Amino acid sequence: MKRAIVIAAALVFGGLLINAIVDLPSSPVDLRIAVADNMANSGVSHPVTAVLLNFRGYDTLLEIAVLLLALIGLMAAGPMLPPPPNQPADALLQKLARIATPPVIVVGGYLLWAGAFRPGGAFQAGAVLAAAMVLLHLSGLLSAWNAQLLPLARRVILVGGFVLFLCISVALLAAGSLLQYPPHQAGLLILLIESGLTLSLAAILAGLFLFLSRDNGGAP
Amino acid sequence: MSSELLFAVVGALIFTLGVAGTVLVANLLRRILAFNLMGSGAFLVLVGLAQRGGESDPVPHAMVLTGIVVAVAATALALALLRKQHEMKDSEEELTEIDDG
Image 1 (cartoon, each protein chain N blue to C red):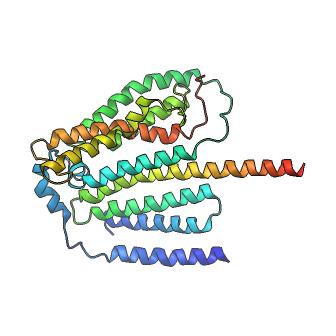
Image 2 (image 1 turned 135 degrees about the horizontal axis):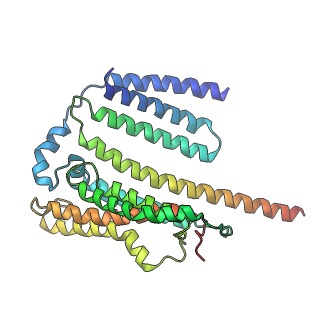
């Protein structure tokens, strides 16, 4: 009974939603024009990167804060059960992971650099690097992280991107307003922020997996 | 129907599926997945509608990029909490078994 009601309600809801989308009037504010007019001052030539790191830098700053918060929440939930006994890792898988990792790091670096003028940027680069770390973990070459025993260097990398971004935005307060880059240095500042974000994002995204994993990954 | 509208309509359908799943499914893991489906539908609507009128609007694209990363983090947190709940339930059952025995 409940099922039938929910399905009927969902159908009506879906119909209304589609109706609203089809009849949607064109927006009174065209942000495309606003973005295109200010591209010259943004310091990059790809509009999505300009929006993410310059025009709407606030969103990105809060986003990395949210990610950090989610990771801290995940660490606080903590493991209760001891890890299961180690399984011997597949030798072929390990070999392939060893071969794949260096090109993946290069791809991550390229994506970071390419973000200035074409699709790419810190998020994509961070996701690729995090995937490499997950691959290494699954093939038994990188042990799972323990929230109770987290080395200082790893903590610095986890929060570094956010702290760097925050410091730059606060420093810009002295020159004008929060997150308003001077047009001449904008490109350099965005690259600096994105580099920090890439490392932190890679560590945080990998951490979301590695803190949850109970697999010791072949390490003692 | 133009392709950008098609994306948005499919996004709305996926969102609706996610809503129905979130309400109907009792299993928490599946509920998390259904909730993610809602997010994916919303992203598809945003990306689809951003392309209205020829050239694509970079602002919704940037929003979706931000949204995807936040959705991943939120999902991981939800999974961690789910596992915690699972473990606590297990140890509770063990305790009741010991009490009974």
